[in-house]
Length: 369
Ligand code: ADP
Image 1 (cartoon, rainbow, N blue to C red):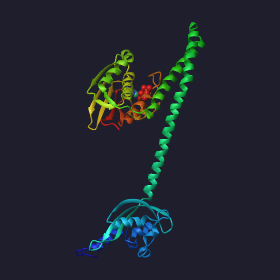
Image 2 (cartoon, rainbow, N blue to C red):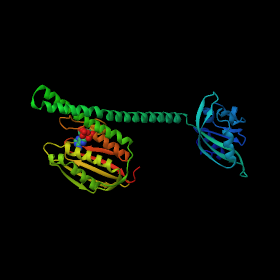
Image 3 (spheres, rainbow, N blue to C red):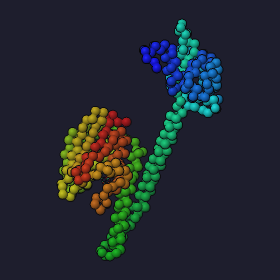
Image 4 (cartoon, rainbow, N blue to C red):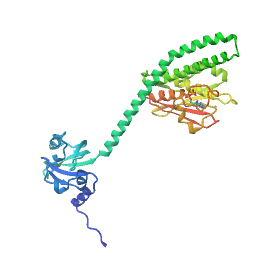
């Protein structure tokens, strides 16, 4: 057993120990490319032992499609350049290809003359594979989103025309049946009229939704205070029917697409009034705050609230937590809000408790994308 103090390791022995314990391949070569040192990881990575490689030219590692690469690296090294994280491919002893990231530096003699190069090579095969998989996945996702978008657009656009026909003829039929109220025919036609109106609302919303992805955003200064007041006036029918009130405070001027922002505010205010509790007069508070790089806008109501287990779901297309007979709607409004806010580079989320009102919060970057 060793007891006394250990003798200090000599600097070159210490360096050799570090080189040998490295996970990266570390090798050196002269300016012709002849290998002069080769560590354990180089053996593991490339399959050649130090004995096999020292004295041999590094070009044995070159794949056939890159014959000039090492000569080019050595030319740059000779002129004193360092090469960092150069991603390329090398051939292993068994003929297999390996993706590597190379960092190559000049080696100088005591006079400072460049006499060779030292290379640190990292095996990035796995990283590359993960990256490629990620790229494929992203491309597939983008493709499917585009497909879905054009599908939604075509369906909603092409359905609008036959639907108009169904609506107007069923309306005519319903007028013709006016003199027979209560008859089966009048009831059935009533269902058709109602169904057509509902389909119309769905198609209009779907069309709006699918357009947000493709429309060019027209950025301008938008005074949110004015926008909220105008929107509240526009909603006077449901506001009046519900006897709803609103407090508006500290809303900023933002740089955004005014038409799209109006859609967001309109949807959030409509929901705040629509999802009211029967025992409470709806009261909405909308206020802004300065979050540094971004503005935050909060729309708060005293309505029925949301079970937070469904908080993410309500932003998905057609997702509703209530039946149509309880609260009318298509389930697209919040998806539209989310898409618009995200296209502006912001986020939107809900904070709520069932029966305790909801708070919809959105952020908008001060310098949009
Ligand atoms: P719609 O209003 O047409 O149902 P939305 O996408 O706007 O569609 O909303 C989705 C669902 O989220 C609503 O059906 C409702 O269940 C819930 N929700 C939205 N806003 C509120 C709110 N202010 N209070 C309570 N629930 C809400």
